[in-house]
Each structure stands twice: as C-alpha cells, then as structure tokens.
Length: 199
Image (cartoon, rainbow, N blue to C red):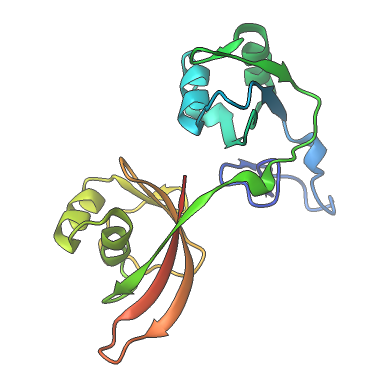
C-alpha cells in the first residue's frame, strides 16, 4: 500500500504487509502532519518550507508533500523528522511560525495550478516537455537525456516514452506538471492536450 497522508499525495510511503491483513491501516504509517501557522500577509512558498527542512540536515526522502495556503501550511514528514523539526524550526526563512503536530490535514484543495493547453505531434515525452517548458523538442530531448525529467516520480531518459492521462511530469528548473486531459486530434493529426502546472 502506498500512502502519503491524503488521497492525492504525490510523495508516499510504501507499506509491505502479510497477505492475511485485509489492508494496512493508514494510522500505522510512520508519518505526521505538521501544521504551520503564520501571518497571512507573509507569503511563503513550498520552496521556503523545503529549504528550512533541508537546512536541518534532513534527507529529501523523509519529507512528503508540503501544501501551502494563506497563513497556513501543512507538511507530511516521517515521525523522526517531525521530532527534529518540532524542536528546531521556529522560522521559515525570516517568517516566524507556530507549529502543531496534532491537527488533521485540511489543505487538500489549496494546491493551485496554472493551466497550459496546446497541440503536440504525439504523446511522446519530448513533445509534452516541450509544451510544458516552452522549449523546442530538441531542447526538451536534451533535458530528458540528461536525466532531468521524471515521470510519476521516476527518472525517464527515453525521449519516446509514451505518456497517458494523469501522468505527473517533473522537469528540473521548470516545475511539476500533470497531464490532465487528452482532447482528441486536429485535422492535421496533432493531439490536443491540457497540462496543469503546480504553482
């Protein structure tokens, strides 16, 4: 079972359990939801929180999704990371924060997206990356061959990798995208697609 704290979590923990278990209970996963509150006029981003956590010498693997709203952010981290963050993090960047580790997750719908739509020659990875990052297919191919593109959290180095609806693309230096919709073809055979960029 894969679980990251809520249904659509992107970063998740894998539980392997005996077949005589009907299902692994989510409460048993070794993670906590940390809730940070701060003044709504202070604008903090995902990068601000991740940077503060990494400054505590934590590995990226112990930090799950970080969802930022107005004046509040929630982050899923392992139990061990939660103890370290709770004892040492009082500021994110220059902004003072209050931290609680006993509040339910409530920011699932706070994630904001930018819609990107266009046509591509095919559903190959280089075509989608080109549209997402506003690059030519040749430059997109260079990024892919340089191992700078992930599909569903795994690095893919093949430019001809075929994508499907719902795939998550991470393009280093450009952001994270979801192939949210495939809308049929034009008369010339190009394919209409819609991408959602996490912002």
